[in-house]
Length: 236
Image (cartoon, rainbow, N blue to C red; front, side, top):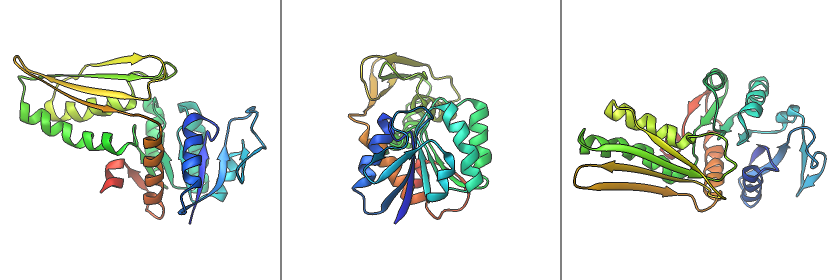
């Protein structure tokens, strides 16, 4: 049984990871982290007591972090201190923060990906193939939509799509961001020629697909050697 710790356990993603892990016989929930001042500090959710002290990391086998860049940067120091495997889904990290993730991965295993959804990670693999087959006569643009509270734009997923498509085509790929209502996450890649158009769209219907992907990554990374991994590695 894997002892699981969750950062931001009272947030939308953290709470859903907690709820789904509670029904998974492969996990024992041993640590729930929240920022200081959160009313839930010291209280229980299920059998888990919520804490603001990162020293609770000594209780876990794998730690899952879907918080904000500022919180993740602090968490990374303790991940290295306690040598705990990390599943990291925080988006909007700066270049310096990403470099810190890379440095941490030299001493602990880290699954770091902008999107834990299985379908999206399949797209990361096939989009370059489509772009190469269509060739330079087809323009490519990305449209992504998320809820109004999402701070980073374009999304981490859109940035990854830009990365894999740019590598395949040696072109700059424009992205357009929409922030409205409670949209969980929509990503559309448009390939457009003079006489036809191909649109490939992924829609997230709930946060469960991200939470389930994170738990799959947590099972996979347990016992792995230090290194920086992606969901592509997990899916293999």
